[in-house]
Image (cartoon, rainbow, N blue to C red; front, side, top):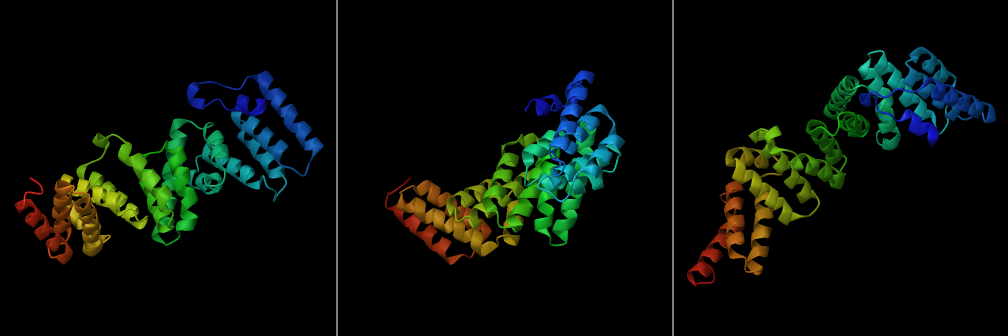
Length: 299
């Protein structure tokens, strides 16, 4: 709408709401309240305008007068969060803004445009901190909104994406977790130290394994083992464990053998034996590959 367009200029651009536009928008808000006082839309519009003008106390008064509870109550609550941030209380802001992070990300992004870069940083940090606390106390459902707020306010920072991926995995939303981790892995490798790169790949493999994609899981594990064998072994022995890791490589190796991709099958076996040197299935497959090599099936 025209009202939303006028209020959608990010603060980082240096754009500000013109006085005549502000007066017009306030009049629209007043008209909406007169038309239907039981709906919060007029109060919310007026609060948005006053916030854009820097009149935070008046904006708070508008939100206080908004009817509750209604379908728009979360929108009003999120705007109260915006005002908390303007007062310097990032934890309180995160508490109110996270309510939109999973239910209406578009509306939340509209509100985040009204923040300075430094305000967004403090908000994302506060949201991530609360998400961490909730995850450690075994409350992933409550943590998810904070995780998503941290991602949106922090411009999809890798740390926040990893945090949300962890939360989503605990909620068994493996597809979404894998998508977040995919964004991390697509980022500049120079921004991640070696242990972090290895753990990202191991995490990706674990998620793929949970989704039943053993071949791609083995590929992710293999990349991790190639980067830093000892680090990768340590991570994989902890989760998913020696047995499941070795089984993923065994299945992949057997598939490669059936397709006569002997070199790939050999690599899968070697990687699997790094995970579990005593795995009988892998040892048998290695013997078979050696036998076929001696018969000239592959060089």
